[in-house]
Structures are given as C-alpha cells and as structure tokens.
Image (cartoon, rainbow, N blue to C red; front, side, top):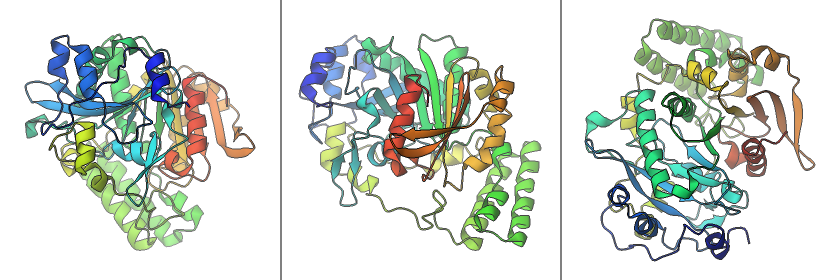
Amino acid sequence: MLYNCFKLILTFSVFVRALPADNRDEPLLLSPLIALGKIKEAQEMALVGSLVDKFLSYSGFLTVNKTCNSNMFFWFFPSGNNANSDPVAVWLNGGPGSSSLLSLLTENGPYRLTTDGELVDNKFSWNRNSSILYVDNPVGAGFSFTGSLDCYCRNEVEVASNFLALLEEFFRLFPNLRNNKFFLSGESYAGKYIPAIAYAIFNRKTSIHLEGIAIGNGLIDPINQLHYAEHFYQLGLADESIKKEMEKAEEDVRVLIKMRRFSDAATRRVALIKVIFGEHAGYKDFYNYLHPDGIRKGSIRKFVNKQSVRTAIHVGQVPFSNSTLVSNYLHQDIMQSVRPWLEFLLDKCRVCLYYGQMDLRDSYVASRDFISDLKWSGRASFQKAKRKVWRVGDELAGYVRSYGNLIEVMVRNAGHFVPMDQPKWALDMFNRFIFNQTF
C-alpha cells in the first residue's frame, strides 16, 4: 500500500512516529525547538493526530519574523513512495488570502472532504511520488498569523521574504530533504507569489535546489491577461453590445495600470467582473463556465474548526480565515505584474503554466498571447513549437506546447481548479513535469 505508514517509516528513517502533544490550547510553534537543535522533538510534536490513520503527516507553525511574531502554518505530507529521495513540492493557493487547505481538502491532497464533512481517500493525491508542503501564505491567510497589522505583506517582495524564512526553517526541521529536488506549485493568485519566491531563491543565492515552478490558471501579468470580452463573446455569453462595453472597461483598467494607479485598477477590475459576469451573463461563480452557480463542496471552515481537527493539526485557538485583510493590504499589488521575474526564471528553471479550459476569470484564452510573448532565450523556438495532443491512457486530457524550460498546458473539461475537476489528468501532468517526462 503506497501510503502505508509502516513503509513510510522504513523508507524515511528521520520521520519517527510518536504521540504528539494533542491537548494543546496554544498553537504549536516549532521554531523555538529548532533554534535549540531539538529537531527530533520538534518532528515528534508536529506529527498530526489521528484524522485518517493511513497518512503520515506533520503540521505546525514556523516563525518567519520574530519582531512581528509572524508565524506561518504548514501541513506536510511525505511522499508515499520514497520520501528520502523523491522531490519536495510546495503548494500555494491564491486569493489573495485563501488558505492552501482548500486545495489540500478538495483538490490534490491525500484525502478529500465530502459534502457530509467526512474525509475520503484521494487516489490521485500529488504526494504519491513526491512530498507535498501545503502552506497558508502569506501571514493572515488560513491559520497563518502575525502579531501586528503593520506586518501584513504589502507587496510580493515582502511575501517572498517571509516565505524564504519559512523554507529555511522547514529544511532545518527536515534536514534530510534539503538536497532533494524542489518545486513550487499553486494556482490563481499564487501566479504572483510563486515567481516572486522563485526569483528570491535564485537572487539571494540560497542553497535550495529549485528545479521548477508550476502555476495553474495564474494571474501573472494582469495588463496582458485582461481579455474577457472576446472570450465571453465567442462562448455566447455576451452579445456585440456587451462585448464592446467589456472592451471599453478593460481598456479603462489598462490605462489605470499604465498610470501606475494600481489600487484604482484593481477596484475597476472587480467592478468589471461583477457587472459583466453577474449582471450581464448571470453567473454567480466564474471559475467554470459549465457551473454558473458553482460546485458544491464540503465546508472547509466547518471541518477545520472541529476541536478534534484543531487538536490533531496543532493550531490551538488560532482563528481560521480566508482573509479580506490580506487582500486589503495587497490591494496595491494585485494589478502589478511579476512578468519580469518569470522571464528571468525561464533561463534558470523549468516552468509549467497550465490552464483549465473552462475558467472564465484567469483563462487560457486570455493568457496564451502573453505566454508566447515572454522574453527569454527560447522565445522564438517556443513560438514555433507545435502544439501536441496529450493523452492519459486512452483519454484525451488536453494539449501541450513546449520548448526548453517552458511548458504550456491546456487541460480539457476543467475550470479554475484543475486538480478538483480533473484529478487523474492533473496528477499525470504534475508527475510528468516534476520528473521531466515528455507529454
């Protein structure tokens, strides 16, 4: 059994099962133990209590800024294959302000939360052949917290700085993983976080072995991804007059961005989405155009607020939040581009940009021109590269275009949350990417 705990212990001797401190009212802050060199004790205390006995995992808080008392929550799942040598991948949700537990429990984690509030095995979990680190990023998202409002992140440089501090602490906690291949992955607004973090890893000459980044339906370069009108029109969701109204509104946002009035641009974009998606198209949810009212999922908030769950994952009485505060403090950042960092990265590591076909908000249609126009050493060859059919077994999963370090993937019959809509194909894509296999 891939996820059998006994096998995990045999293959990864540093992870020794022990009874964690289950009766804690306070969050488990691991950095003080790490600072004292009490690594084994910290690992044992971080062991997650019995939720689903099949899976070995670790959770707790790592301090990223002592002055601010800023602590970031993580939930770590060692690989079900060979954790000693398999790659380590971070997963981040977007928002800004969304908890990465949303994906852990509804997309690519070892189990999924049902609408009845129960956990069931996810046979397409991404930790089958790699270790996955879910982090509530930045401080203020999910269970991550800070002691001062002044220490909420205002831009991606601050986000990256905190995250590098978290990674350094994580690799002190699990030193056997430091030399493993490392990847950053995530979706949506993580399209801003991931290039910023990856750029900082290289720019600061850290010892982290970053091999690649994977971003799903990411907001990366807002000014060049602001193309709703044509997409809506071709889908039949807008007529000619609405299309013209959308094009005018989009241009208004671009003008604000060019004037560096980023906060105004973000506000105008939200208004555009509300009017066009809601009032004109009648959509309550814009993450999958086949589901205008959204897809019913289990309540993440209700689940993580169960006392048994809080005790198991060591969060004490820290409130759980999909934080509007995070979004408010990053409001000036939302419409700014991280494209220069992504272009830098294309000559440093592999980059996979994947898109669910049916997303309306951060769509493939709105992003493919920006991808082709990225300035890097392989640009001309990528532009000439032929698009290939991608199959998983006998199933048509999507289409791939690649050259050198850049892979562009369009996933069929999936919306904004690809691993939720197409878990089998998403796992195949992820494994091909991290193990550098062709599609």
